[in-house]
Image (cartoon, rainbow over all chains, first blue to last red; front, top):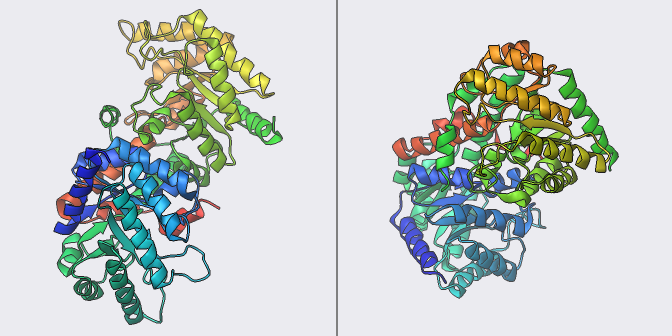
Length: 277
Length: 277
């Protein structure tokens, strides 16, 4: 254990416990440094964004090593704590999760997102008891490196549109979230949930340990924090906004041979060089 | 030699000889696929953009292997021809250039940018005769793989602001560009040159074999093509526009807890997945 890693781990845990945490998700060292230099106290990674940079679709298609390599690349570029999106842990067993969390911590991460989505397995979600073992394995892996790794335990009833309707999804999320907290999760992460009413109910049930992802058209951060979210992350949305900029540049260049789309959000040659020392 | 590589090499050579070539420069597989799917017939890479994604400043700081790995990643994701920015070839000697060009071609590239900037060497530019040997080494390396690698020979009097003024820079560029064409270059690439008058003079001197890079505020593509440019590339400018989008997202999130900057150029979750099959 490096002292620096221990310090980052404590800092990140405190940021999550304090609440009101806005966590941007990076897909390479450049986006990570832009977020850090803008003033964010911590940076997450986005598995979807990283997959796209390597030419893969989302959903564990990069494999463990490629994802860990990019987590290391991002962590190396930053001074602030990094939380790693390790998808479903690149394997079903608790031992797979152990291996992935140890690799993520050794790559410099002090937090993880671990999902219960089987990513194409026989059932859409791991059985609750199995996922509890996987969360416990992540907790134990952090302990083997002498840190409290902040576990953002993702559950996907909303993302996958499971159940007959919102009420059933809320109940599934309640049951799973409580079980994951019991197994050692710090937060329960519910992507695609942004409606204030269910946010309030789930936050109360989880003692405030609720983590959400922003979406185009979602209520503002202050509304979601007021409803009980403790952390708001960006997922792949900032990466997709940057891809939209690339597409606007591409289309304008092909259609009119001009580049006002580049001028509109140009970062500056010298400013970019200054991101890296 | 794969037939596919030979076909891409011929296609790319023809695109460059025909002229009016708009070449966008990618820094990862995602940006590359956005450019390809928008309709560009070929894609270049940007060494500066790739360096930033790995946490380095521009100027050969990634080293040869890291740059080649990313060129391979980009080429794997595309069906259109790829031209690789190999900076100054990662070494001074013709043998260094040979090794780099062979690696770039084996990574899937059928064109290269090779610069005469020594990147911190004793003098700002390689001696003309030395750079001619380096260009010839690049040509020979392509032949060893049975392809005509399209050589965009970059010369940096304008980029480095050498000489007492524009006329002296034009003269230096004239002398060097002619020498590089004589050594086997297909095009002479003059970054930071966008003023139509010197563009006209240099294009005439090079028999039209002039390649330029767009800049914020530069005349439009049609003006630069009319003045005699045969190829216009984006360099790192699209990457910097995407970083500017990331910065706008970051600042808005920190200042107001909202994400209109994400909504403005959002690419779409499903659309992103569809980029990769």
